[in-house]
Amino acid sequence: MSYIFIGWPLLAIGLSFCRIRSVELLCFNMFLLLIMASLNYYEVVLLGGVKHVQILAGFIPSGYYLDHQLIIEKFSLDVYLDFYSSQMVWLVLFVSFMVHLYSTVYMKDDPRINLFMSYLSIFTFFMLLFVVSLNYVQLFIGWEGIGITSYLLVNFWHTRPAANKSALKALIVNRFGDYFFLFGILLLLASNHSCSVVEPVTINYWTAVFFVLAASAKSAQLGLHTWLADAMEGPTPVSALIHAATMVTAGIFLLIRLGLALTEVQPLLLLLGGLTTVYAGLSALFQSDLKRVIAYSTCAQLGYMLVGLAAGGQSLAFYHLINHAYFKALLFLAAGLVIHSLNNEQDLRRMGGLYQVLPVVYCCFLIGSLSLGGLPFFSGYYSKDGILELVYAQNEFFVYFCLLFGAYLTVLYSWRSIMMVFWGLPNSSFTVYRSIHQIDFRSMLVLICLFVFSVVNGYLTRDLFIGLGQTSEWLAYNLESEFYPSLWVKLLPLSTGLLAVTVGITSFNFVHVGWYSFFAKRLGMDIIDGYLTREFVRFCYFFYQLIERGLFELFGSRGLQSLSYYWYKKIYMSGWFSFFFVFIGLALVFFSLLNLPHLLVGWTVISYNKYD
Image (cartoon, rainbow, N blue to C red; front, side, top):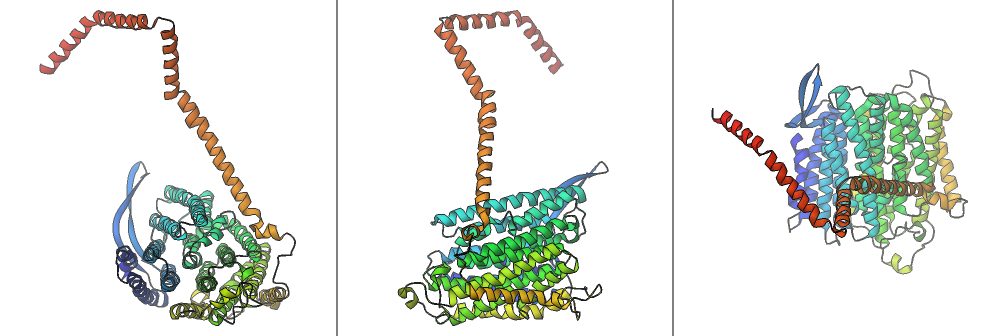
């Protein structure tokens, strides 16, 4: 069965050429894979155990010297299913199946729907190849495949200039992360002579920094985050699949695999995650595009995961990754139905009053927002508050208040989105609102499934991540042995959320707030990013002109050509051209006659030695 997780999604390439009902075949393909992933989840996660299947042995050779002897190692193509990879396999296939089913309705009028569904299936294949890897070389192959297929998906509507620019921006920013990842693998091989994800490895500070930068590019941490919001130019199913449960969490999954080897860069991870949470919350609060608001909320939640990982809560970070996937996919798909109903309108200022005509979408969006904000007994509460308590228990108060302020902003911009989309008076034309119809059965089924997981998954899987039979007053694992929490520590996140709801109800429109333009433009980070990119390209072009087309040409072919032409013109124009070449010819003939006896003797000796 383990082979199927690698090979079966590749059937999408063949099914894409089918002329009859290939869309339904792709959905059925994902459904069968989901059933097999459920069986694997029961065997590995619930019953305990590890599965390891070697598919191809020695497909990449590697050599190094040990005690003056060359040692050759060969990396294999494996399927390794442990607790983390089995959870990710089930999560990826579940969200992928939901997105496939949703896309059959959302993209039904697109003439290239078969190609779009094939892209989704191929992306799922590379994501599965990434999560089941046993070594970092195979993991890097899946990492690269994710980047390439995400470019194809974001740029699916390639006739739109904004989609072209966004896809290229995502590809270029992620390419920086790919370089850092590759350098980290090379340094890891040089120091440990092994790159297995299950063997304990020791890495130095700079190797850890390279891996952190690679994860920051893929998971959109502060500084390398600018591609995430722009990637919303792709279709909404792409946003739900890539930016909810799969691509953006690949960097966090990489750091989870490294585990305790990141101890030296723990302060860097804490600071980076905390600042990312605050920045993303401030940016989302002043956005007018519905999908960009949800995209920046993804960026903020990735900051929570990074902080939980840096604080030693590896299982808590992974717990939040799983919970986040369900309610973020729910939010994206519900937002897609809103946009689709309003004739592809994404501006929050042109919506309003939709709770009467789209009651199911309103309920699902509300539940997803409550889970995102960490309301007690929803899925987001168990993992999000657990990370807050873990950071507080380690006396990282600056990072704790960054996360707390981020939680306040999360509730505030979520409540603002609900009020501007579903409450109030309609702000669009009467013709648009009159054309709104109820959602179809398939979309409703997808929303209800994600609705259920957004509510109950946190409670049902709590023992798997926090600890079996955990009865302490802390949500984080093994913290009651140190001290018990104060009541205000437990109530502070809830009080912050209630305060944000109050502020959101009283003043949900922040257009007239001072510095609105500054925050709406993402605190100027896109301007800084564009300026640095332009200056870097300008410097590279200047360096190219100076070296490649300057010094190399001056002392190379162009210089030789100019020198020859200069002397040719000088000799030819002076009338000595014919005499010059006659003189050279006579000199060569005279030199040949002087050396003729020596040449003949040399031939004789060579022939004598050859036939003797």
